[in-house]
Length: 452
Image 1 (cartoon, helix red, strand yellow):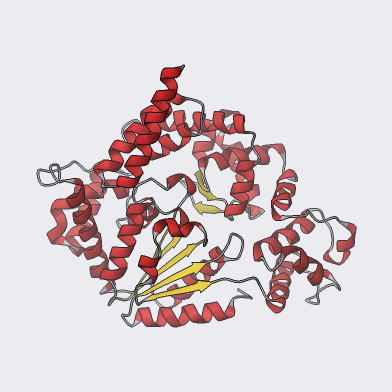
Image 2 (cartoon, one colour):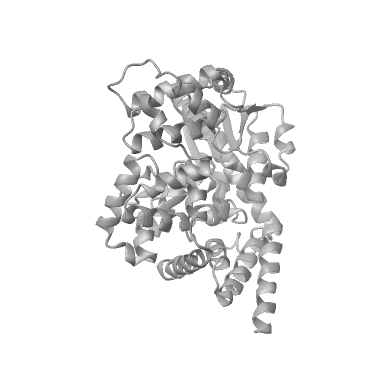
């Protein structure tokens, strides 16, 4: 990473403290495009070099009311849940982990269902627990597991897009940060500044081990270094000397935003223009237009694949695309389009086969792609996706996802049904804010349907 050297050094110092048993909580704060994800990637690389074992999760805009959404991928990796194996084998593996790390917590193992998205049968102890007690017992199990693990190796826990974190995930984060204050654990959180007040972040910032790192616009020197690095990637045969006027033109347009800088150079490269001939091309006026222009350069198959994927979310499974939108063609055709999008660094592969999970590299690209769809098209695609998920997972319906997707469709009967069910599930997990939101929206749907 050619820029953000001061921030990298600050983080390296915090990792060293964490490795000594002085837990750290690092908040990386910046607007979209300022380099949060890239800095997080460097933190992960540096932590691995120091012997940390890492786990990562990310919040999504459609999961603000999904209990523990931010933590699901973290705990699924921690307990090594293999969704291709049988439930019996999954339970056996989870049981083995708990026996090794927190044997006294074995009776509450079924409470992991909400985190692991599996169906461990309730037992005599858990089936009668009140919601608040269920939450406390689950958190105690997770706390003990991390403490036992941290005794053997330092841990890095990364959560991105914290501004979309659900309330229960935030409560768990706060509890673990306090409980592990004297353990070799480093929490790294990345988020945008405006919306975070919703989560009462001062509760985290008040902790002694918290450090806020606010990313500012790139300086002239940092921007020039970033341009050189990107040019070396796109034009490996050219010299390292920057063409006259190139840096000034790009920096003036991007205003110190590293993602904007990178996309400007991608735009020039995609059109086959040499960086020394920037005067031969008219650059888009803003980042939104720039991303749309880049999408327009794709083939029809690639554009359609990208737009269909944007309905699912920033993170999406390839098989869902063909499943809910058969017009894309068979899986090999979709995979070919995704391979190209990956090579263009638009949607890199996140999880290889058999899952084939992809990720919009930048949240702005996902947002612009989604917003480029007409409202009626979005509504229809959300309904198709929800119907596919209903049929695909009848034994373990993703209630919050169904409430979200039907909620953005015109199918108000299904909206009402899944908003109600999601509200009931949220109440069971002591997610009061989510329960109130889902229930209120379900009620409004019922009123609308009665008037028709």
